[in-house]
Amino acid sequence: STTSPFLDPGPLTTPGALALIHLSRDNVLPVYLNEDSGTVDGYSEGPVINTRFGSFPHSTLIGQPWGSQIRASIVDTGSRGRKRKLGNVIDADATGNDTEAVASSTSNAKDVKTAPSGFIHVLPPTPEVWTLSLPHRTQVVYTPDYSYILHRIRARPGAQIIEAGSGSGSFTHAAARAVYNGYPNDCEDKRGKVWSFEFNHDRFLKMREEVQDHHLNGIVQVTHRDVYNDGFLVGDESPEAECIFLDVPAPWKALPHLSRRKPTPALLASGGLEPLTDASSEWKSPLRADRTTHICTFSPCIEQVTKTVEIMRRLGWMDIEMVEVAHRKINVLREKVGLNMPLERGTNQSPRNVAEAITRLKEIDSRFKEFSKYKQDNDVNMEDIDAEGDEEGQNGLSIEDSDVVDNQVPTNNTPTLKPWAAGRLIHRTEAEIKTHTSYLVFAILPQEWSEEQEKAALDKWPCGK
Ligand code: SAM
Image 1 (cartoon, rainbow, N blue to C red):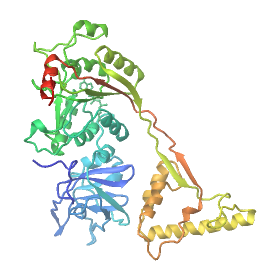
Image 2 (tube, rainbow, N blue to C red; image 1 turned 180 degrees about the vertical axis):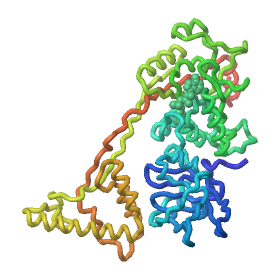
Image 3 (cartoon, rainbow, N blue to C red; image 1 turned 120 degrees about the vertical axis):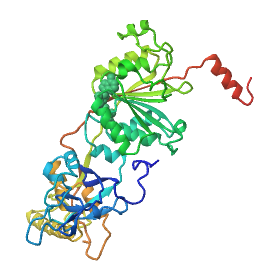
Image 4 (cartoon, rainbow, N blue to C red; image 1 turned 135 degrees about the vertical axis):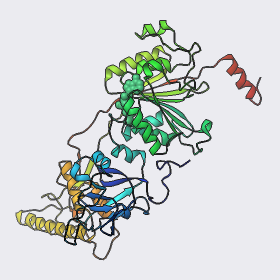
């Protein structure tokens, strides 16, 4: 059994590995590294990732420590007088759509560009970076939400999680890592596992294929199912779950199945729900009997929350609480110029007149020129920085940009004073703040104590009775 690259990618990139190519903060491209080179006119050429930062043959990405910065290569486009076609070129810019770019990676032959000035980073797959790069088949749960959810539902190594629906698998990958406890595939009964349910057939098939490709089988089990009607047993097997995450439009319709005992038709009718229609006469709970169950439901509208909470109360769920994760990105930066800037380094004095202000502006201008040259000489990707600034409607450098330079090893040529240290530190929130993703409803279903359980617990107790 191969360990999933999401759980242990190994030290180096290898042929066939899934790599997440980090082009810029908001642009990450999933790529299967492919060494198959084929020969063109006597030259050996492999697939190439073609970006606005230059061309990156896969061969330069293989055998590298994960996280490496890879510089663009000069790729021969036919210097011997005619244009050569190279197969398997990904043109991330041409499509304007990373997903398509990946899909076309083995079929779309284009001429490779020659513009080797930039670099990319080759990252191992992690749930967080996968969430940023995955092919969207549905709305997905993002990292700030799933980190909090997994913590609150007590997902931990060895836990059994029920998830519905699987959707694009964003939550599934994070959940798989949370429950992974290192047992190999043949220790089925001891493994932490995500029991994932999806009723859309295409998404189910895609999800199953992805689980296979990412070597997550055994840790993630995907079932094609309408959980409102058919519940959470797989064949006759109960997941024995302790943790539940429901990201479906009507979570309250799935809740009756997540009970310790079969809810009566009268109880369900009081909440406006139909009786359960299980074929088998002997009802089985999908929950682990000797543990408290922790649940989270994920709903964008408050009306869905109200209905979910009502049904939770009727079915005996407790400690019901609603939380919203309001995630804001705040860019911290220095103002480039301004009359209120200190006149001299190390002083807080502002210019006192126009002449002083002009001197000051000239000084700042020359320091920016010095800074630009420094960035160029040290191969800092200006294009990347500019693009990010533009995307966010900013003109200034964000804190991430100054990090880039701060991370460079100082050399004799490093400017003694960083030019941007001239400005006041300010922050701007994003122009378009996404404040609302969904409401999270948390609750617990306590363990039920039967007479037998009480007796068994006392028998185990060293000084029992
Ligand atoms: N949590 C997922 C992620 O992070 O990628 C996204 C889930 S998506 C918003 C909701 C999914 O629930 C859809 O794929 C939909 O087909 C599925 N779904 C809706 N009703 C369902 C039901 N009754 N049983 C199973 N799946 C259902």
